Length: 369
Image 1 (cartoon, rainbow, N blue to C red):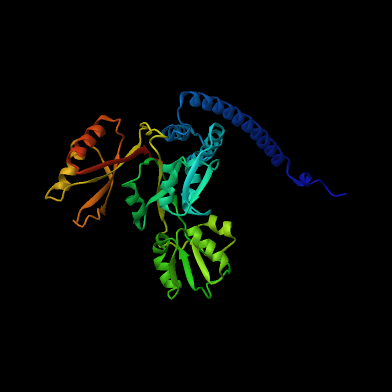
Image 2: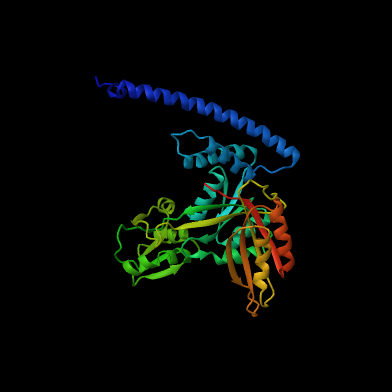
């Protein structure tokens, strides 16, 4: 008669496993107690008419837990664990609908899941315009769009859409974007075209020039769409992340082909002001705005002077043509701080006075860890 599988395991290991199993049961009981309290909070919020998701509150909870963490659990592991816990509890209060560039397997989907947790209702969209439309129209509670890449700079379509959308930014997240060449065959032979989002094609320009110099580079609406097309046609390859490879059953023919080894993309989280209040000050906040000034000598200097006078740090400054035919520009600015802080409020008030156009895009907590 064969021995039971556990009979060959060392007694110490069995004891440790028993302790872990006991702790897992305790954790499950505690998580359900937390979920029950979250349901009660949800009922109070419904009676008060307040929103279920407060990004500044969740950021403060995670920051507090990181500060208290005694180890050996790494501090960077605390945030994703608690985001999932809070996501599951939030789903008991109300479903959170999140729009992003689809289909399944995009970095935008990964950013949405990383920010909100996996207990959400996914609303994949065909393009950035549709993401903003779905969120503006109420088909989604939040929208997720990329705004900046560490190697290719700003995502111009997102910035252009910010000019006219009624939505505002309530959060941000950044994602390490590892680009892989995906294909039905595990080979570089007989590739006719590489399909990917234009940003991904640009991020992999050097690798493609060296390894597939004569192959067409075919822009499509998203990396996941490129992966989907590659799954249907053996002559095509896609550029996307591991999630897309798994989703469409493709081989990772060449991993990490992005030219910048530390390639990251920053995403903005958008909401409608009628549905979601501006986040309160968290202690480490960013305020984003877009402005323009009249085309005259010293105009940009006058625009920046209020920030210096009131000690407000500018962390990003980008320009985009106003398309007026007059060589005028819109300036996209990120400031350190929150309008609830007196020095930030004073700087914004003076800045508004010297600008021909002024729009506050949002103020939101940032991850400083």
